[in-house]
Length: 389
Image (cartoon, rainbow, N blue to C red; front, side, top):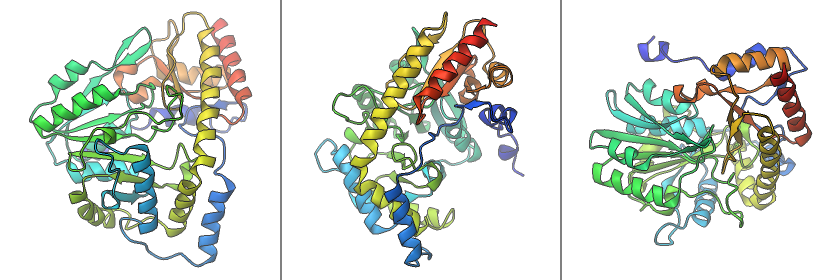
């Protein structure tokens, strides 16, 4: 096999989860997934499609009706600097957010290209350019009073004419860090000067708690022109409760879309029609899903963060977006070892910070997407008892 593949690191989250396999007494919060099933009307749309015999290939770029629904949805959330929204010819349907991101990297990165990623970050975002043979550089967010923040001036200085691609994930997994509109404008302007592409993973944009009017997090689509070198990746997984459906999308410059269709042909060919029908209904009835999900997750966030902040010496700030609390325990410098001990000794399953970058060593990620907040209270008590040992 290629060296780049052989050198890929195994998931440290899976390493911790494997330590708890077969134990019914473990409270698992390690994966980025809630425990609430997809709404019944979304599932019924897929059932109806199957019963109607829609089991054949679809267009590489996705069903036109779904692409239009996505374009309308994105345009409503992000009308752009001129209020024109997002047109259908900028949208491609993908087999999940992971596939969307990998397709973007395959489309943009040549072996040896300079790629810059902001970390800590979900490990796929740094693995994908390495798979393509890129020269990957990382820039770490800085911790100030337990809050992860961007050194904007340092980032702008790190982006040069040699930088082929900048990868950002905001709202961020695992830290909850979120870009401001002003930061996005500055980054976009710098990338216009250097000719750098931006790949923005914005799958958590709806899970945003700093707004009082249910608005989503700031997006590069709010400030960018359609022809800018910007690709935005999205997913139905988080805000539509559809993690297992593997359905996502890309928004890109219109000149890129036809070629993306060719690339999809050589990856997955297309998404299943019945899955796309479910996604279309999810979008049509999104006001019955996403606001409720966000309100519930905000309650879960406040429950978990309030409980964790009561523990002595724990470092934690209130995440503005996403579905994770990211924290550090006093005297615990190895997050992977700590996470394994928590499984074995406390029956508590968390993700180690080392999974997201070396700068997050010693930190722990707790997914607070729990249908029953009582599980969060129980987890906090298990952690409290373990600290007292």
